Length: 155
Image (tube, rainbow, N blue to C red; front, side, top):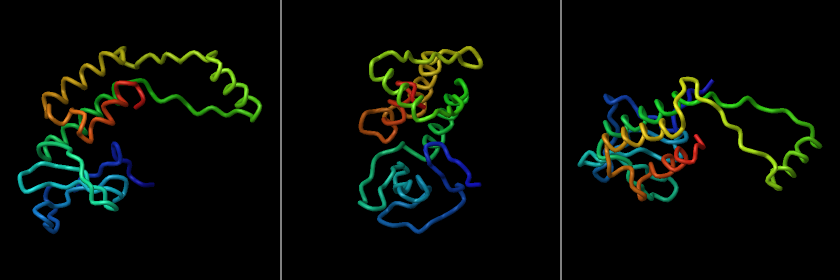
Protein backbone atom coordinates (compact mmCIF):
# COMPACT_ATOMS: atom_id res chain seq x y z
CA UNK A 1 0.00 0.00 0.00
CA UNK A 2 1.25 3.49 -0.89
CA UNK A 3 2.20 5.75 2.00
CA UNK A 4 -0.20 8.71 2.33
CA UNK A 5 1.15 12.24 2.76
CA UNK A 6 -0.84 15.22 4.02
CA UNK A 7 -2.10 17.25 1.02
CA UNK A 8 -0.04 14.92 -1.16
CA UNK A 9 3.18 16.63 -0.02
CA UNK A 10 6.19 14.37 0.46
CA UNK A 11 9.31 16.12 1.74
CA UNK A 12 12.55 14.26 1.23
CA UNK A 13 14.78 13.72 4.28
CA UNK A 14 16.77 16.87 5.02
CA UNK A 15 20.04 15.04 4.39
CA UNK A 16 19.12 14.18 0.80
CA UNK A 17 20.77 16.50 -1.69
CA UNK A 18 19.46 16.93 -5.19
CA UNK A 19 20.86 18.74 -8.19
CA UNK A 20 20.74 22.50 -7.91
CA UNK A 21 18.89 24.03 -10.86
CA UNK A 22 18.47 27.78 -11.32
CA UNK A 23 19.48 28.47 -7.73
CA UNK A 24 16.77 26.17 -6.38
CA UNK A 25 16.80 22.54 -5.37
CA UNK A 26 14.06 19.96 -5.21
CA UNK A 27 13.24 19.04 -1.61
CA UNK A 28 9.97 17.22 -2.13
CA UNK A 29 7.04 16.43 -4.36
CA UNK A 30 3.28 16.83 -4.38
CA UNK A 31 0.91 14.21 -5.77
CA UNK A 32 3.67 11.79 -6.78
CA UNK A 33 5.66 14.34 -8.78
CA UNK A 34 2.91 16.34 -10.48
CA UNK A 35 4.32 19.32 -8.57
CA UNK A 36 7.75 19.77 -6.98
CA UNK A 37 8.58 21.41 -3.66
CA UNK A 38 11.57 23.63 -4.32
CA UNK A 39 13.95 25.41 -1.96
CA UNK A 40 15.46 28.63 -3.31
CA UNK A 41 18.99 29.77 -2.57
CA UNK A 42 17.54 32.17 0.05
CA UNK A 43 15.82 29.25 1.81
CA UNK A 44 12.25 30.05 0.77
CA UNK A 45 10.12 27.16 -0.41
CA UNK A 46 7.61 27.00 -3.23
CA UNK A 47 5.46 24.51 -5.11
CA UNK A 48 6.21 24.32 -8.85
CA UNK A 49 4.01 22.81 -11.53
CA UNK A 50 6.17 20.37 -13.51
CA UNK A 51 4.07 20.81 -16.66
CA UNK A 52 4.06 24.62 -16.78
CA UNK A 53 7.00 25.64 -14.60
CA UNK A 54 4.70 27.99 -12.69
CA UNK A 55 5.62 28.31 -9.01
CA UNK A 56 3.55 29.36 -6.00
CA UNK A 57 5.15 30.52 -2.72
CA UNK A 58 4.96 28.07 0.16
CA UNK A 59 6.99 29.21 3.20
CA UNK A 60 9.98 31.26 4.29
CA UNK A 61 12.01 28.05 4.77
CA UNK A 62 11.80 24.28 4.97
CA UNK A 63 11.31 24.34 8.74
CA UNK A 64 8.20 26.51 8.33
CA UNK A 65 6.87 24.14 5.64
CA UNK A 66 7.33 21.22 8.03
CA UNK A 67 5.64 23.26 10.77
CA UNK A 68 2.62 23.95 8.56
CA UNK A 69 2.26 20.26 7.75
CA UNK A 70 2.46 19.42 11.47
CA UNK A 71 -0.13 22.12 12.32
CA UNK A 72 -2.58 20.79 9.73
CA UNK A 73 -1.97 17.21 10.91
CA UNK A 74 -2.82 18.30 14.47
CA UNK A 75 -5.94 20.13 13.22
CA UNK A 76 -7.11 17.05 11.34
CA UNK A 77 -6.26 14.71 14.20
CA UNK A 78 -8.26 16.75 16.70
CA UNK A 79 -11.45 16.56 14.67
CA UNK A 80 -14.18 13.98 14.41
CA UNK A 81 -13.55 10.78 12.48
CA UNK A 82 -14.56 10.79 8.84
CA UNK A 83 -18.07 9.50 8.26
CA UNK A 84 -18.34 5.95 7.06
CA UNK A 85 -19.30 5.33 3.44
CA UNK A 86 -22.99 4.89 2.68
CA UNK A 87 -24.31 2.31 0.23
CA UNK A 88 -27.55 3.17 -1.54
CA UNK A 89 -29.58 1.81 -4.39
CA UNK A 90 -29.99 4.01 -7.46
CA UNK A 91 -33.49 4.91 -6.31
CA UNK A 92 -32.30 5.83 -2.82
CA UNK A 93 -29.51 7.97 -4.26
CA UNK A 94 -31.93 9.73 -6.62
CA UNK A 95 -34.33 10.45 -3.73
CA UNK A 96 -31.48 11.74 -1.56
CA UNK A 97 -30.26 14.00 -4.37
CA UNK A 98 -33.78 15.34 -4.96
CA UNK A 99 -34.19 16.11 -1.25
CA UNK A 100 -30.76 17.78 -1.18
CA UNK A 101 -31.59 19.95 -4.20
CA UNK A 102 -34.82 21.02 -2.52
CA UNK A 103 -32.99 21.94 0.67
CA UNK A 104 -34.58 19.15 2.70
CA UNK A 105 -31.30 17.50 3.77
CA UNK A 106 -29.95 19.21 6.88
CA UNK A 107 -26.17 19.15 7.40
CA UNK A 108 -24.97 16.53 9.85
CA UNK A 109 -23.41 17.85 13.02
CA UNK A 110 -20.56 15.58 13.98
CA UNK A 111 -19.25 16.03 17.53
CA UNK A 112 -15.47 16.03 17.92
CA UNK A 113 -13.91 13.12 19.79
CA UNK A 114 -12.19 15.35 22.29
CA UNK A 115 -15.00 17.88 22.56
CA UNK A 116 -13.25 20.63 20.56
CA UNK A 117 -15.56 22.50 18.24
CA UNK A 118 -14.59 23.25 14.65
CA UNK A 119 -14.32 26.91 15.62
CA UNK A 120 -11.85 26.14 18.41
CA UNK A 121 -9.79 23.83 16.21
CA UNK A 122 -9.71 26.44 13.44
CA UNK A 123 -8.67 29.19 15.85
CA UNK A 124 -5.81 27.01 17.12
CA UNK A 125 -4.74 26.21 13.56
CA UNK A 126 -4.72 29.87 12.49
CA UNK A 127 -2.79 30.91 15.59
CA UNK A 128 -0.18 28.23 15.04
CA UNK A 129 0.19 28.98 11.31
CA UNK A 130 0.59 32.71 12.00
CA UNK A 131 3.25 31.99 14.64
CA UNK A 132 5.19 29.79 12.21
CA UNK A 133 5.05 31.98 9.07
CA UNK A 134 2.44 34.75 8.92
CA UNK A 135 3.12 35.71 5.28
CA UNK A 136 2.42 32.14 4.13
CA UNK A 137 -1.21 32.49 5.23
CA UNK A 138 -1.95 35.22 2.69
CA UNK A 139 -4.24 34.88 -0.33
CA UNK A 140 -1.33 34.46 -2.80
CA UNK A 141 0.21 31.54 -0.93
CA UNK A 142 -0.23 27.90 -1.86
CA UNK A 143 -1.60 27.39 1.67
CA UNK A 144 -4.61 29.64 0.99
CA UNK A 145 -6.44 26.62 -0.51
CA UNK A 146 -6.02 24.27 2.47
CA UNK A 147 -6.74 27.16 4.88
CA UNK A 148 -10.00 27.95 3.06
CA UNK A 149 -10.96 24.27 3.13
CA UNK A 150 -10.30 24.21 6.89
CA UNK A 151 -12.40 27.36 7.36
CA UNK A 152 -15.28 25.68 5.53
CA UNK A 153 -14.77 22.42 7.48
CA UNK A 154 -14.05 20.51 4.27
CA UNK A 155 -10.90 18.74 5.47
